[in-house]
Image 1 (cartoon, rainbow, N blue to C red):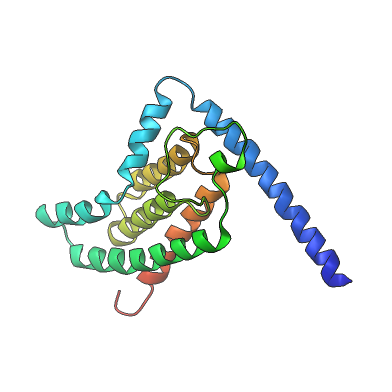
Image 2: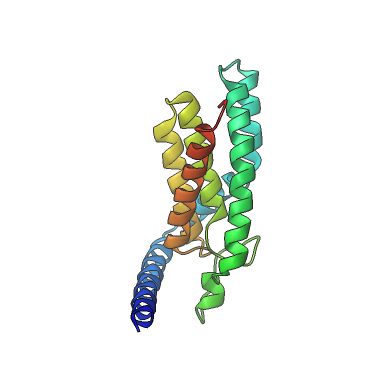
Length: 185
């Protein structure tokens, strides 16, 4: 009987969180209907498609920045773990995207994969922000502002709930910190 009560309480909490997530999603999505918000959200979202994670270390190397090898090792190891974790969670939990879950709702863009939780764009953006902050410290504010904008862009474009992006932010940052604390990094 205690297990049944625990299960019912857990389900009640998850249901309440889902309702809150949907309400926040709709508020942010409809708030993005202003004239310049959605084009900006689309551009921001594209900036996290993956190219930056390759070109930024090359740019830093070309400009003679210090600690580029350390950044490359951190990024490579972190992204390997993050992409694996992201794929495993997304394909195990199978949370439907807003467009699939809500009748009469249409997202602004079509996501590259089927499921919603966690947000891979947000996870990778926070991983990059955290990695750069761990190696260089100075760009922390700008990088976290960019990563946060990525998270909001994914909601404004209608492909993620706020909870998906929050989970992605926590996952990306945590993995970068975990890898940075490993031996030799």
